[in-house]
Image 1 (cartoon, rainbow, N blue to C red):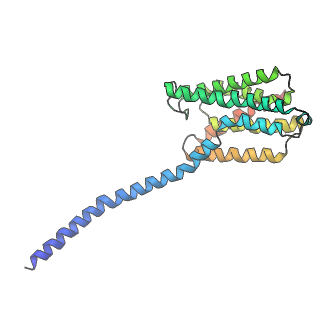
Image 2 (tube, rainbow, N blue to C red):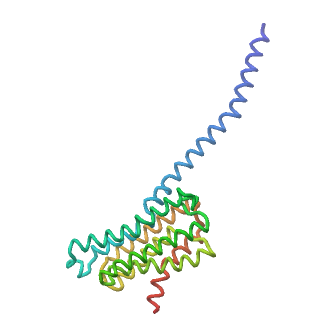
Length: 239
């Protein structure tokens, strides 16, 4: 009579031990995986919110509100035309091309992870910036309103060449071009506060952190992207 309870206790203990060994680690692994996913949500969100495709339009708005004497003389229709052209050619058209390319299977991911996709992305951005510059130039606008598009086009040309040989961060590349454009406008027209340049540098650092946190790039690819974005302005200063 005394052996029966012992048998049940022993069996129950073995069952509990088996449950502990095979269930609890799995739960811990699932919790750890869920925690890692949560930790990646912020960098991923920042990567999308601060995506470089929005930067030309943002810079156009910044330029139109800069301390440039002709800004006060522009008619509202001219302001709307500039913003509309920049929005269509540097944001809407490239975005539609990328989404359509993903849908048609031309690219595998909107993250542009492989070499051919990155070459494709840089080409689309460069051509879009050139067409935008060409259309605005036909309105005989001062260089103040179009120089940033030439900087984007020139940087894209450099980036396209490098893309055939090395991978670099397109996010940081885009932000670096804007940092360079703000610096160039401060140097050429004294139209922005240095605080705008400082803010752009800080946001570039935030984007770099998010890309590294997502393991999308190595530090070397981050530095290369930043250097390529600065290259057109460096060439202009030297010349």
